[in-house]
Image (cartoon, rainbow, N blue to C red; front, top):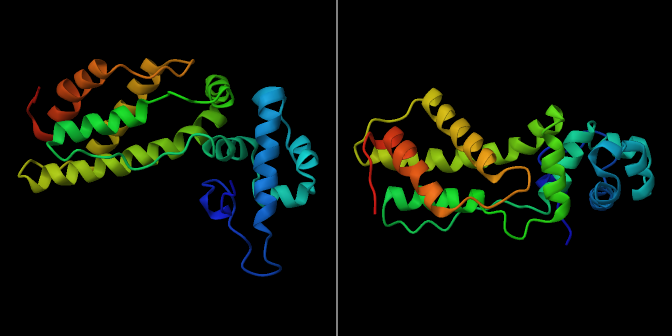
Amino acid sequence: MTVPAQSHQHRLPPAERGRSQDSSRDDLIISAALELLGTNGYHGLTMTDVASRAGVSKATLYRRWTAKADLVADAVATLSPVSTPRYPGTSLRDDLLALLEQASNCDGRSAVVIATMEQARSHPDLYRSLTERFSTFIRTELHKLAQRSADAGHVPLSEAELDVMVDTVIALLAHDAGPAGTSVPRDRLAKLVDNGLMLLLTGTRETD
């Protein structure tokens, strides 16, 4: 599947002047990075090897990605896309649970994604690049739900409170999923919603 260049979060934007960039080179670079991740792992992957495997110059590569961590994060993202959950709309609690279920679902995750996430634990630059997209997704969706809560008459969250909620969700999901990328059980997610997120959003608990 061809992925448009602009869909890669960490890719540098094309220069405003000069020749237009060939987006097909992006696909070659991403494919090469994934192949090398599978054989060499993150530690053994080099930008020189990626350029060679993709059949492009290092200048072509660095005009698109200047850091290995950013390239790897964008490559892994093509194997593990995020999308807006299908919210049931029955209650704020149900929608929060739907968000967490989708965000924590690791079923079908490829070995390359799992291995890269595990290696990120010892590479802070890779961890930051990998979690940035996920953090943006969680923040966007929680902001929507927080706005719904405010529209229903509850006290609106401040930006600082929303940041705390996002950080809490990401930390707990990462902890429960573990290095092997195990999906978090629904009852565990329900406890997080009932004893944490619902209290932050509405000041009350709501259970089944």
